[in-house]
Amino acid sequence: MAPLPSPRTLLPLSLFVILLLASPLCLLAGDGQQANAPSPVPNPDASAKNLEEQGDALRAQKRYLDSLDFYSAAIAKHPTALLWNKEGMAYLFLQKYSEATKCFSRAIKADKNAPEGYNNRGYMEQRKQNYNNAIKYYEKALALQPNDAVFHYNLASSYFGKHQYDLAAQQYRSAYLLDPDIFNRVSRIGVMAQSGSPEDRAAFSFMVAKMYAQAGDLDHSFEYLRKAMEAGYKNIKKVYTDSEFATLRTDKRFEELMSQKPQPIP
Image 1 (cartoon, rainbow, N blue to C red):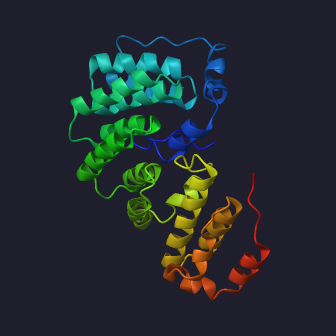
Image 2 (cartoon, rainbow, N blue to C red):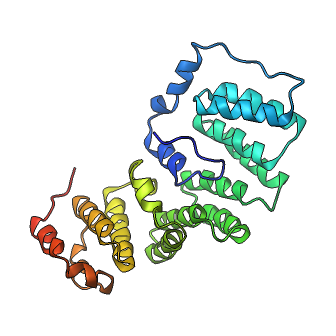
């Protein structure tokens, strides 16, 4: 599993996918280990920075309850948006969504010019399928930090959840232009977070295949085209007519793939 992301990278990338895919038992596995280890106690004389670093170390060990003690102690000394985001993420791993939401809201209140709180708050709305609210938060994050690939990716995910595929494609493309490896990195972790149904997975894979083909990255385009076919994409014949696939169609692998007709995976 990928290392824990920074406070801003809920979606997307690794944390965003893990939270959507992992079962409750998987999410709480770290706390089963925690029960066998003595719980450290925050030193009241330690600085907020030192307490934060100890909280980070505990969270990296999946000792989320212990990390909360240190984040809370740090916040008591010096409350910052960053600390509220970190505490919110620890609650998120514990599936304490109400507490996580409160933390992310406090992060926004602590610093209205810090985009991470808006992004994280958007995720909390997205996980409840409140896509319109999520979009508002993601747009605020992007207004403050427009060149962040993760924020564009998360915004695209909410558009995708609403089946507004054209708008989703625009934002996915923005994310790709800012970070050409963004889809590849997420695919190594698991199924895309927003792809809850086979139909969504198929549509998403075809969309990404088209994006890679247009960018001239044929290897990844073929990879996602196969995924679309395996997910049972119903409009696969568009690959013969869509202009973005023009170069792909000249590659000998194209006919090989289409003749194989990969069967949908249940």
